[in-house]
Length: 241
Ligand code: F6R
Image (cartoon, rainbow, N blue to C red; front, top):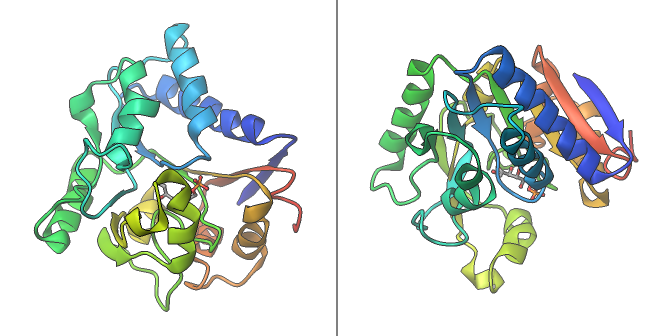
C-alpha cells in the first residue's frame, strides 16, 4: 500500500487523474472501475480537461461503476448513472455503450449482481479501480460488517452512510436505504487500486484502513493485502497517520 499526501483535496483528486490518464495511454482499451461522490469530482474535471486538450483518448475505454441506489432510475438526478453522465461521460469522447452502472431497478439483485461480475470478467477484469472512502471505512457500498462479501450484491446502507449522503438529496428521508454494490472480490481483483480520501471527516477511516487490523468492520482495510494500491490523501485525511 502506497500513501501519497497532498496539500489540498483538489491536488489529491487530480493526482488520480494522472494515474488514470497514464493507464489509458498505456492501454487504450483499459477497463476502468469508477466511483461517484464528492472525492473524485476534481479528478473527473481534470480528465475532461486532458481529453479536451487531446492528452488522453477515451474512445476505446470500458467502464464499470461501483454502485447504484436501489429504486432510482438512471434519469433520477441523484442516481449514480446520472452523476457519471453529468460529471464525466457527457464531456469526454467515451462510447456511452461501454459505460456500465449497476441497475438500481433490477427485479432480482442476486442475478443482476452475478451478471455484473460476469461482465467484468468477460471484459478481462478491471485494470484500475478508483475508490472513495466512506467515513465508516466503506469502499463501494461495502458497509462495516462481519464478513467481506466478494460478489456484487445488494446492501442495506448504514445510518452513517445515509447521514453522509443526505447532502445530495432534499432530505434524509429521500436517501434510498438500499444500494447495489460491487463486492470486495472484483475490487481486490483489480490490477491497480487508486483510493482518494480527503477532509478531516475521513481521517479516522484512513487511519483504521491503513494502520488497523484487516477487518470487515473497516472494509477498506482489506486493501492492505492488495499488491498495487495507492492512497491519495490531503493533509486533513492523513492527519492521524
Ligand atoms: C461512491 C462510493 C462510495 C464513496 C464514499 C465517499 O461510488 O462507492 O464508497 O466513494 O462514500 O464518498 P464522498 O467522496 O462523497 O465522501
